[in-house]
Length: 194
Image 1 (tube, rainbow, N blue to C red):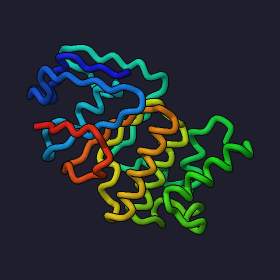
Image 2 (cartoon, rainbow, N blue to C red):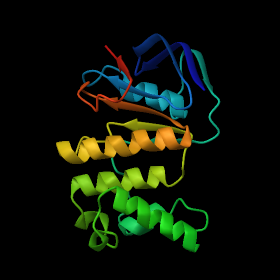
Image 3 (cartoon, helix red, strand yellow):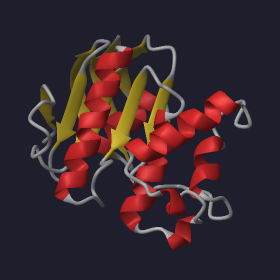
Image 4 (tube, helix red, strand yellow):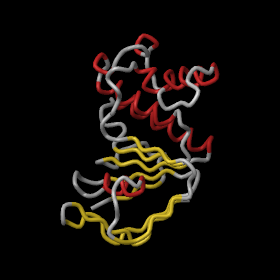
């Protein structure tokens, strides 16, 4: 379970988040949405421990939390496959290699693209590789900062379905940010950040 209570955060002397309350249980997905600059990314970074809060409490009882940044942050000297394998403890293990292959197929990346470097991939492909790197760790809580911004409508919908299925199958949880509430209608929790 994740609980935020009376959370307040300042950035560069300006209060961005004030007295924010939120809770999330295993098996739940929530979407923070609102215009640029309203604090969606700040909330995700607070949960992840990347930035400090001014006041309030953050109680994250999930054993493994993974953060997917807006930027792909792939290593340019590693292929798509290698960027995902990088976070695996036993990347040479046959079972791990099979998991990576399955995940790359689920992310709708052609086998020819698996061994390309980030500069050889489109923006949407890079975003999917970064998502694969986050998913391969099998987090109990996945924080995603505008994860589908570079994807077309059909692919965005397919990947949202993949995330929802993984949450359901693994009884994990997911918080994502988006600038619009126009996401898969199956996502139950929409929280507007204003």
